[in-house]
Length: 385
Image 1 (cartoon, rainbow, N blue to C red):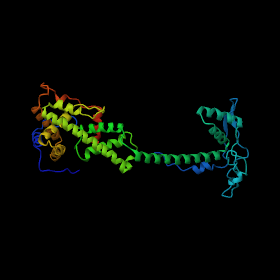
Image 2 (image 1 turned 180 degrees about the vertical axis):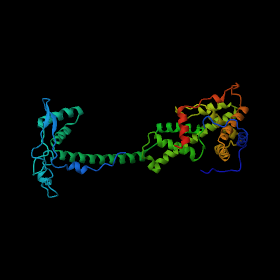
Image 3 (image 1 turned 45 degrees about the horizontal axis):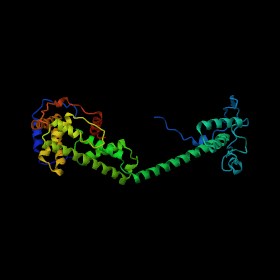
Image 4 (image 1 turned 90 degrees about the horizontal axis):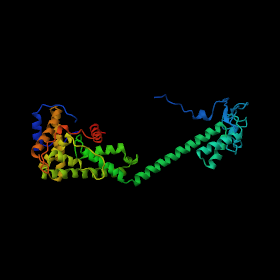
């Protein structure tokens, strides 16, 4: 990605690069298959002839035993085409809709009706079926296997059709009526806050921060429908919410930086105030780290040079870009760290006293590495997720 170039480099950034180039002491950073299945639907509907089965079922006395198949063999679907008498309307039995053939009896003899009825009633009671469903189940139990398979497949097709209609109706309703919920906005504010406090963020304004937050929304959803991004109008509401969240959080951070300049707040205390400026109701937390202290020190130095609202954040982004560009041109990864440490040292030389007049002797090198939540955000920004 090409970076916007400018002939002017801020005084603070120029001094940081000059100091970093002269230091080579510390060059490493502490952190920064199964085979294709054949369609056998026709095979299951039209089973091979002469395929006989036995049925084991409990009668009312609890005895079990096989029910012998028909001794006359399988004669269902004996014909070859539309003229087969098995498909004539006269051979469709009205009692249960059982398919039969004039050429012979069913492929399988049925168990005693009393045993079937007792089993159905017991099982229906266990499943709490309705009375009308129990009657349908009794009819189904008396059907021959071919009829059962046809009925099951027809029910399967109807279920798929209904599910598709539900999916389409839900998607349309969700997209047409979607509004940012309180839970959605709470999560959005929390993660927007985490992104702006991440030392892995390369720019605070423009598409970069918005894209990072948009990717997190797509990954974690926060309760929005899966089809929402397919509707440009509905997804536009999400993007406007993202822009508002980032803009408000940037304003909150800049306000803390401005107060830190006026009150000459020491760096660690100032960074703590930036961390505590998280949105109202946000329970996510991060910790003061040396990397975040370096970012805050840079922000304060740039504020002293470009305090205007419209010029401030672009100036911060340009300073970060100038440091990265210099490190790439010199093929020196450690230059970035040395430049950021320069901002820390310069800031501490100018602001060494807290508001209450107590001098701070905080060892920045021993600060926390950050919370697991903040580290997860840093990783996502590093990987571009």
